[in-house]
Picture 1 (tube, rainbow, N blue to C red):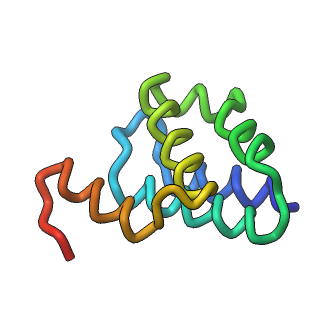
Picture 2 (cartoon, helix red, strand yellow; picture 1 turned 45 degrees about the horizontal axis):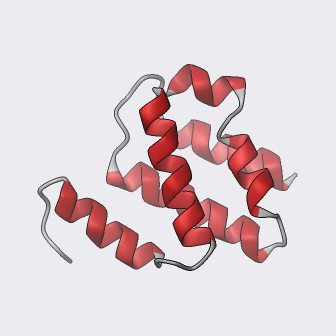
Length: 96
C-alpha cells in the first residue's frame, strides 16, 4: 500500500518527459518523508524511483537528482524547507 502511494504520488506529480520542477521535487520528498515516518526503509523508497515506469518518464539525470533529494531529506541531512529554498534559488527564484 505504501509503495503504491509513492508510485502513484510520483507518477501524478510528474507528467511524462517533463523537466522536474521544484514543486515536483518537493512533493516527492514529502511523500518519501511520510513513508519514512511510516517505517519504510530508504532502500525501498529509492527502489521505486528505479521502476520501469519512472525510467520511462524521466531522463537518468532527473532520476539521479530526485534520488539525491529523497536521500538527503529522508536521512535528515536537509529539511524539506531547506530543499525548497535551495531549489528555488538554483532555478533563479526568490527565497520565501
